[in-house]
Length: 442
Image (tube, one colour):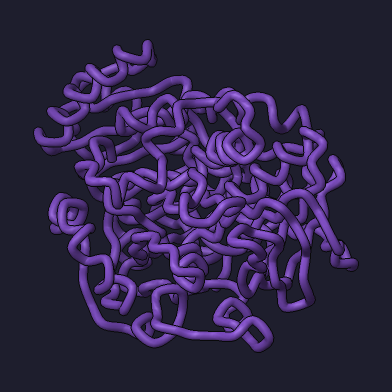
């Protein structure tokens, strides 16, 4: 069941020409469209389903700097500055609040990892506080676990996944961008060896530059044009409750379950770090590149063969630009939730917080997290095709990073001074002999 997402109006007329087409109406694509249109570029944002309908509307809503990989932390810090101002700029509430994020654990390995991360925090002058067992208990009143320690970031927070991407897209429209939903991009129009437009199901939009922010679908789209983008999908299950007892102000992570308090008093809940990797043609194609990543997370991942081998973003498919594409066959990637995981999530949440004993679930949904071998996004030009840019592979970190990732993509496309060093996110790192490092955060 898809989570309820704030819906915005589509533009009816397909523009003949714009400066830049953004493919994908998740938070990164919507943010890129916003920042590009703010700079007076003519922008069309095309989305095969509806804005925020896939992973950007299915995540925990965390906007965090805590426990980021050192390569990603500068971009995350820039992102928090953007979150601070975007609601006021656009004139609508994205639900962003700096409520702080708390991590607590009964496992010494977790506490040791957070201790090591303090060295990263010091490099960037980021405020983080290690918690003793007593402090962790005091900061989680009503919890039943005997935590041995934790870590707290008072300047981190959350926003509303149901609102953020749609409001950013609406902000782009206020700046003159065209928003086209139920409009799949089938492929690129290429002339003289460079991008000259996008072929959509509703016709051709001519443009000199194109940004692919297609989330889990980005690799399939790129592969159609001979561009390799190593992605693997991880399935998770998330639920939302009815408004209930106030046991967590912002977000709370522990090894069992993660809770996020939403603006209406409900919670988003999920099992911490648990996921399923389905065997797919795309997954097999890039399997060797993901060995370090999956080795690190092996205990938390299940591997199985499912329907994704034959359908969805990682299946082996061919299509012509004048006929129905895979992007039209699956308007919204909406995997079914795992019912056992829903039950287990509730069980663990109630065991830790007895005050949640009568909590009721209003929705549960499946999520599809597109990951890269090093858990770092690609925000880069594709060197083999002038005029084509990629912003994808946010690896489960995309919601909080979304505004900054979209801003950086806009900077790269327009040649402006980048908001953060783009080198860690260059496309070429997978093919130029660079050592691919497993992620250093969580």
